Image 1 (tube, rainbow, N blue to C red):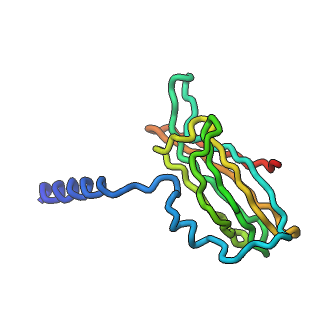
Image 2 (image 1 turned 90 degrees about the vertical axis):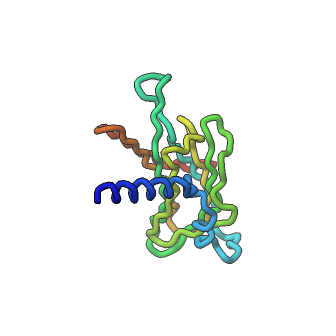
Image 3 (image 1 turned 120 degrees about the vertical axis):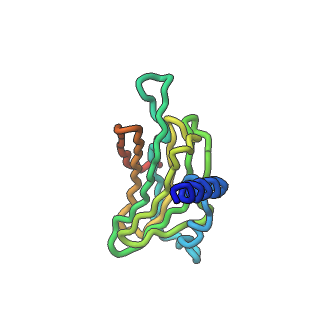
Length: 169
């Protein structure tokens, strides 16, 4: 009986390995549900926010690197109006564009949080990865908040830290 469960378990693992793994929230279907269906008005206030994100950090010395999983939160702090994120560009340590997550504005409903996950195995960003967000909002609406939480565990040790976006020109 134990042998039968062992065979079934091994089969499940082997079949699961053949499935393509989605990395770093890149599936366009996830963003199409949030895309704005109409043109945004010219009266909206526009802004840009820079957010540092670490897909790797140095551990012990410069020769040893630790991978991290990053959760990037795009938050609407307004309880009445939506905000719009027009671009979410992800850059590596050298400033090279890795990916743009969507090509049309998305909405974030009042008090809603929308996330981008940078997978533990997605190390393209390196030790100095960052995002540049372009956003729009009504003039009386709160600005969106951009934060990242990075985490890693190894054995019984874990590390985590966060960063907060800074408005730029």
